[in-house]
Length: 295
Image 1: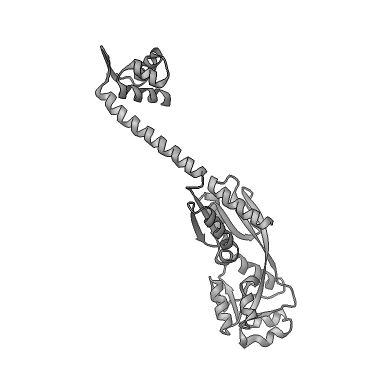
Image 2: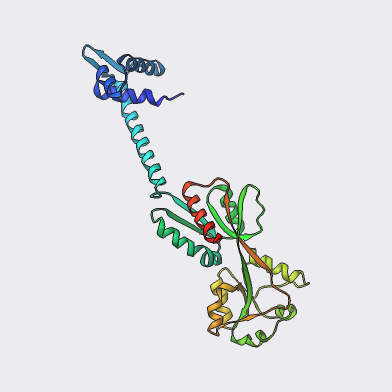
């Protein structure tokens, strides 16, 4: 069924004024044009909407029912337009972001703070999850942007490298002796290892590094939180594999020591993943993020 919004606009004005000539004046139309539109609408619906009186017109019972729905429909259109105007003024909308805990704290949060201060009316929705789940959510349209470790092979998504992430092994005072000289992979494999949970990108990269040298490792502690890995390392439970940026303060305070490996540890690349067509509000966020890393 074809809906002609102009017909219904004319119908609504006539239903309120109940006079074709005065309705035509209000609509800046001729009276014959108004009469023709009403006739077309009635023929299209197959029902009389007005009773023709000597001094005007009056809605039929069916016309009253239609007018009630048409008025509500135009009110909804007005609300929709108002919402769009608010959206364009950044007074409405949301941005949906996915990342893992380490990336949220070290990378996303500083720029998220800036975005929130600049656009306080835009709602921020943040999901912490693994890379695969984040990518799936972006493809489904559940998330607008994801911050994950690369590589990500998804041709239908826009993938932008942002920065290199340097990881390292750190230990507490019980193992400080090992930090005095570069450590071999064989010796490292003998130390209790405190690692992120299996299936994480960082864990897979580390396992690949060990495997390339003929070692198969098993985590003694397997956790989802970098903060907990660091805490257990400080308490002397073993060597935690964490981003260097996370432990600078603890190293300076003498709570942790970094283990230098004879074979360089793998460097990861952090990237931003989005759909090729972003929403109005998410576009503002991603541009702010890219500008920050372009500086």
